[in-house]
Every structure is written in structure tokens, then in C-alpha cells.
Image (tube, rainbow, N blue to C red; front, side, top):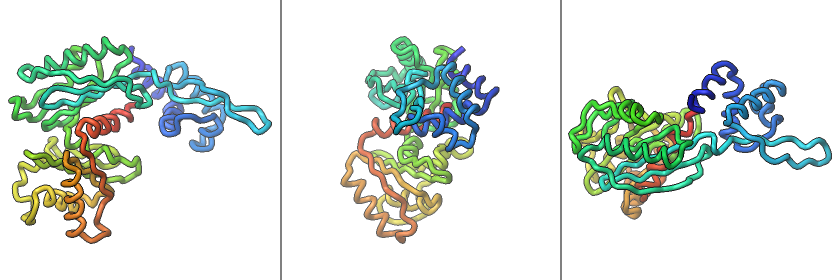
Length: 312
């Protein structure tokens, strides 16, 4: 049985273990007193939950806290080697993958070619190779440049794929838990603020396409069948005049009234010009916080990490 499965069974039986681990995820290092104050759980309950979390290998004891004279308290933290994550970005020229520990530290980054003529088989072999390289990898998140809905590739025109359950196929072969997401929608997670009701919109611009992604409360908004933000089905984008990317951004801001907008464009000067054009057309109170990225892989890896870090 995998570590995540054992941990899930423990939480199902004793929910306070999940409360304690959630606190550790947000605060990294803390004492029993810190957790008691923040969660409202009793001292014995927290102490028991921490013992069970250590038995499940998800938490570890760290150093002893400094003291001004009284008894020094034990500090607890997440175990960075509880499990590892593989994050895979699929690009036209191949794939880039990272292995990260449970705290998100990047352990390795590798670039490989991937045979698109038999894509799922080739990707499966890459995942198999990753698990041989790092036996602690239990979860793999994959960014795909196509329409995604749950475990399905709904449509990938360039590869002629439609209604393919890629998650099931790779999980069956590798035993690794697989999560997939559309690349443009992942951009919307890069500005995630971990605040209730937080709405993030992403704008992706390259020489061939413009795309929109939306996340709400740290979760990607897909629509009924995964096509939310697929602007190729919205040719006039409301009939506004001007640059296509700016029109797309104005429509997205009007529809979602987001807290922030992440813009990806390899030309940062061009991205800044989009911000200026958007700002001139909207009143200040409607403007989101703007974040600009020019590195596709870095932005995708951050989005993938946001996707998987809530796995517990």
C-alpha cells in the first residue's frame, strides 16, 4: 500500500491528524502549542495526532525550540521525503520534468525527447523511468497543450487524439497517481494567493495563439467539458476593437472580475504594453493585479506545483 493510501486511511479514522498536517503544510515548523492555539484542538489531541503523523511518515521531529528559561518545546515539521512528485511539461520539442520533494524543493530537472507519433506510450515510458530514478514518486502531474477534462484528453487536434483517457492508461501501466491539466489553464494557478474566493485569470500569448485560463479558490475552472477559455470558438470576443490579446483580456476581466491576471508572453515588453492598453480601457477599480511571465517551463512548473501540493 502506498504512503498516501495509508495516510488517507489514518485521516479517515482520526480527522485531527489531517488538521495537524494541514497546519504543518502552511507553517513548515511549529510546536504543539502553536498548533493548539491555531486549531483549537486540545494539547492531548494534537500530541496524539502528531504521533500518528510520524508513524505515517508524513511528519518528523526537528530541533528543540529556544527557551527563555522554561522547558524547551519540540519542533515538528513535514517530512520532505514522505513522497516525491514528478511534474512534467509537454512541449512541441519534447518534455521537461522535475522531481520535487514533499515541501516543493526541486531535486532534479531533466529534458527529454518524446515520440509524438505514439505519444501515450512514449509518455508512459518516461513516467516509468522517473519511478525507477526516484522510488518515492507516487504522484505525477502533467501539463498538456490540448483540451483536458478530468482524466480525459478531450481534443488534441495536432495528434489526432479525442476522448482518450490518458490518466487511466498511464496509471494502469505505472501504478503512479496521474493528474493532467491544460497548459493555459495552469497559468491561472501561478498567481494563486491561497485566499478564500480568490479569482485568478491567465492570458497566454504567442505568435500563433491567444488563450485564457481561470482558477477560483485555487481550483482550475474547466467549464462543462473542459473547453472554458478556448478562444478559437469565440472568434469576435465581444466585438471589441484592437489587439486580439487585449480584447481577450478585457473580456475575461469583465466576465470574471479577477483579483489578479497572469500574462505569459516571451516578449516582456509586449506583455507590458498589454497591461498598459488594458489599464487605459478600464477604470482603476476593475483592474486586477498583473503578473508577467516570460519562461514557459518555469510558469508551468509553478502551476503544476499548485495543482499537486494540496494532495493531502
